[in-house]
Amino acid sequence: MARGGQAIRSLMASSGARWWKDKNTLMKRKMSSLEEGESVEQVFGKDFKPFGDVLVHPNENGENCFITYLPKFMQPRAATELFEHLRDNVEWRREEDSVGVQERLTAYFGDPHCTFAYVGLRLTPQPWTGSLLPIKNHVNSFFTSHGLPPLTACLLNNYEQGAGRIVWHHDEVRAHGSCPLVVSITLSPDGNRLFEFRHVASKRQVSLPVLHGSAVVMAGRTQLHWQHRLPCTPSPHRISLTFRSIVPGYEEGLLGSLKGMDDCQ
Ligand SMILES: O=C(O)CCC(=O)C(=O)O
Image (tube, rainbow, N blue to C red; front, side):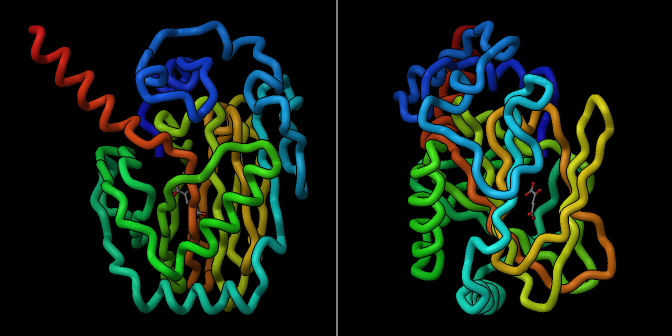
């Protein structure tokens, strides 16, 4: 979940650099004029073309949001095996964030230095496990081949049967580079759950029953203009893998720069 609309707007607009420029470049929190009137190519890069079952096209309202759905991203059998393995082997935690005790269990994995700070939590990644590496590699080769940035970290969410939800929110993507990307893979062998989107300005809503093995993709400026939620309808057990384009060292760099500012006072 995100911390403050305007702050996010500022930081997301703050780097004209592409995602792999070094962290010193990314640390420069200089406001640029990019967000207003920026082109699809400026946000997504020249190699990007929309793909999948597109729910929101980057040209819609000139907002550079891209939401798409890939119903068959994983083979059902592989998705079931991964679901069972993660359910039984991950050390799940119930975090308490600045909103309260979370209504789902989570675990966080990623490349070194991909610290993820959101709603008052600061998560240090556990190293990728043998069971996550194949899907991480598949996700990366698929999305980079579509011109999107590498996915370096993954927050796993575990919504137990008949329980668990996330209320309307924007994802925290300040550390996700100049074209933030969040890919949520659904593992729910016993049935579908609803994934809902709401456009902030128009209040238009889209409800998507997400299939076992499917992927929902939110890229570009989606988190500025759209919220999403997982309502607590009577629902099967679902684990989601939310892959994120976190820039290694970004949060650590922020801590360093904040410390530097304290030192000067
Ligand atoms: O479970 C999902 O697919 C989405 C999770 C989510 O919205 C979040 O982690 O912020």
